[in-house]
Length: 123
Image: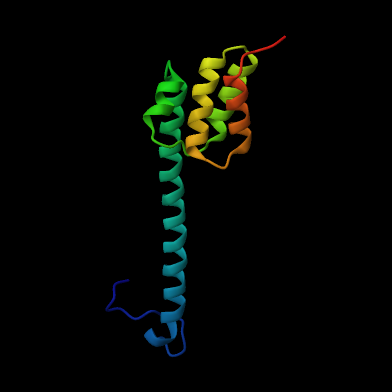
């Protein structure tokens, strides 16, 4: 059926454009919004997957974190610094914690752990 043919089954068999317009517009708007949401989600997942792959395949995560000016999630370098702190590697712990602090200056736990990593260890 093309646009010049008459759709059968409504009232007198004619196509009532003014009556069917709200139904058509609702259908178009609903499907457009769903499509926009799905396309946005797939784009976000693609970018996130590329970043995860880059982080997992790098040999030196400190260099990768330093390359980005401010990390988006300061908890990641904080956890890495905490891990290195407990493994008695104070220098790398201090580097990670500095990156976490640069990402969020109000991250008090990172400040305290950074200061602890700067102090000499006592038994």
